[in-house]
Length: 204
Image (cartoon, rainbow, N blue to C red; front, side, top):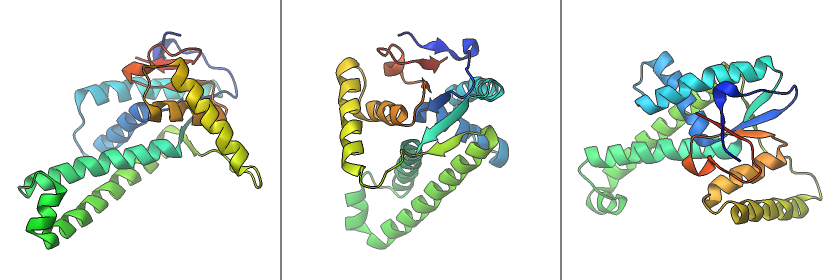
């Protein structure tokens, strides 16, 4: 199913729309730019500019935009990896093992700064949720149903991978979690999401 242009989206009352990491992260960067004066790559600025009216239209149509805890985990990982790479480079190291061998105390200081930078970005992400009225959700874990739910999630995950060979495993997991959360559409800028089988995707 070809991706639907965001500016052509039509929403139904009560439907749930899942933003994957490629859609949520530009909003986080845009919030940091407006509130903290941080720079933002042009492509992310373009995406954030398209997402804002899309989300406003969804909410006017009584739809509910959301992200899962997986998205927050990936935002944190992106922030940490970027900060760690910059810190290592600034200290003259190529790899963590080099820094540990050469100066363990310096590596400990790098780790502390990276942790602080990661927490700052996660704080921006939390502010972004509030700014755009996006919910943060995770699948409910029902007492005595944990094994059954996990099996069902794995089954959906495998089916998504089988039906969409261009997807990587994490993308398929986002879709499986979204299905468990009862979403009817996804927003993604990843190329592999452009033509998914029987899955409604919004993009630029």
